[in-house]
Amino acid sequence: MKYVPKEIPEGINAPRTNVVGEFALLAGTLVALVVVAFYALGVAAETLAVRLSPEWEAAIGARLPTANAGVEVRAGREREVLVALLAHAPRQGYDVQLRVRCGEKDVNAFAVPGGRVVVLGGLLDAVQSENEVAFVLAHELGHMQNRDHLRALGRGLVLMTLVAAVGTGSDAASRLVVGSGVAVSHRFSQRQELAADRFAAELVQRTYGHVGGITDFFGRPALREGGSWLGTHPGSKRRVLQLERLADQHGWGTGPVTPYARAPSLCAE
Amino acid sequence: MSGRTLWELRDLWSFVALVAVGYFFGRRIEARHFADLRRREHASLALPVLTAPRLDPAWAVEDAALVTGIAVVSIDYFKYVAASLRNFFGGRVSAYESLLDRARREAVLRMKEAAQARGATVILNARLEISSVSGLDAGQRGARSAEVLAYGTALRVR
Amino acid sequence: MSAPESTHGLLLTNIESVPGRAIVEHYGLVSGSTVRSKHVGRDLLASVRNVFGGELKAYTELLEEARDEAIERMCAQARALGANAVVNVRFSTSSVAAGAAELYVYGTAVQVA
Image (tube, rainbow over all chains, first blue to last red; front, side, top):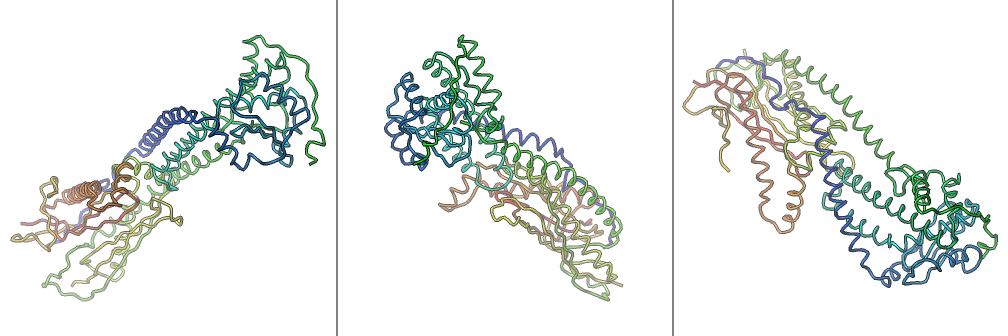
């Protein structure tokens, strides 16, 4: 038998494909699927989560470590502002407690399920008027009213289930799924933040008769930029814009700005 | 009350950057390798590689020895992501196909070149062993490189 | 479950020759390979199946598809060289990723009388 040398043609075992096109198609389809699935499941999860009774919510909330951090504030301007707001807010199923974490330098505040508003020391140092304090407290009351924590809990469970189904791996497809899921979750979260802002503006208007000074909070340098289009919170510009539009729409006016400074005795204990 | 600043975007950009770098450099390196393979295959065309295990009794064999060729070729990040996406949906994973083609052809060429260095005229009973080497992270689902070992008996026939 | 359909009319054996026919010319090593994957849904079902035991039909199918495609590619190479048979065929598989399989088939392309 004779050997006849011939060259094997290219492209049989490694056919030339449009790599970029295929990549774009697959990535796009995957992201689209996750976004659609998560939106649908997120809405469903939220609808179910808010059915939890206030008693259960309070019981869960009391067990969270953040619920008991810091010191409880029972007197002082901060407490007085909260009480004034509560008088004009819809009734909750529980008492609302104010706590301050004096050692924390971040400019932030949050509500814990079951009726606690926790304010970080950095926020009290950054704000310069009682109007801002009222806005921040009212915003947190808004989260409580809308039961945003339960919604976030429901969404978190859905996200975890989705990720577990796809396969926990550090490979790229899993990361893309997780990233997309988180991005959609953050859109929900941003919507909640804007809703809480609206609640806060209305509550401040009802309590004080005007909304002067509430947007000053977003201009405080210590706040820096607290949000981004992929983040949990919308950008400050967007939040201020919403508040201004709301005020225009309802004809709310500005009013006197009462200066505020944190009393040294607040964190003395 | 306020959120964190932009860490999600940073994560996203670094991912995109890695994929882009993988794409641009990977495609060029791959094209160069394939061109190199074609050139060397053309040069070693005279040496046949057979998978037959048995000798033709008519041959007068002067020299016989085991020759091997090994190649380990790595995937670039763009292909890694593309393969991972393809794994998700199912079907032909073309990213790995070209990787394996390169590694195999390289290994066979190296085996041939080893045989040519000995002055052999034919390689018998050629076999290939292929394995995939995963990344250092045990949690990786995809292979990062392909390792091919080609071996056969090189004969110098008068 | 049976022989692949498309071998381009070539004869395949994994012995040294095609019985009863003499080899006239040979063209060296030809090979075919393919890497295939099943989608995550099947992977999930397979994980469930891993608990109970039994044949993983989806993966069997996967390997069958891979086998057919790899053989077809090897025959395409052999055909391009003018061969009408491939002898001494060998298979090799490896897994390049969870849920994906690589199948490789190689042999010597020959012209039989």
